[in-house]
Image 1 (tube, rainbow, N blue to C red):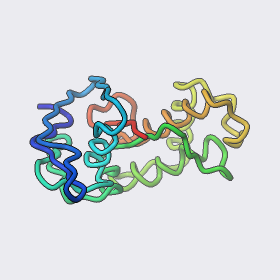
Image 2: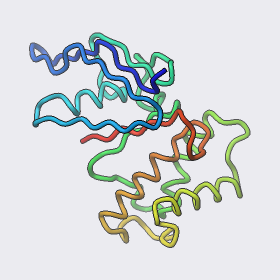
Image 3: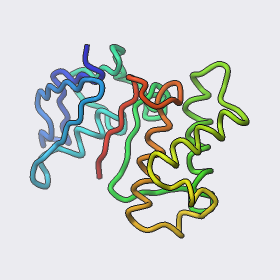
Length: 177
């Protein structure tokens, strides 16, 4: 069964048809790119999948569950995450705190017992090491290069696996504008 399955998805803006009967399946661990010219519907598709926009027809399934009608934060709590071209970290929080927030919000909303104390700190360090930012854990995002900001964004998306652990098959990160 695909991790993400989109079937017959359509989206209109007034009389303009942005998406018409889109079908897409993404397996766990698979990477898929959307390529097309400006105005071809790439961002609209990502927005419909993530719940930012509501599709008129079709179904979005994540890990076998229909997520139509769920708003963005409800989809995030199930393990679906979205990244943007321009990273937007919490500017007044340290790099490590930028990982603690989604760990506490998304993972602890689903996981019992919740990540706390040493386990939470270990997960933060693990993610920072994974993206090569462990030495910058105490820095503010403004001290990072653009490449490091993208790495922080990647680490933030990795926090949203349903159990907060690396390698879990139900996490999905979707990039977009």
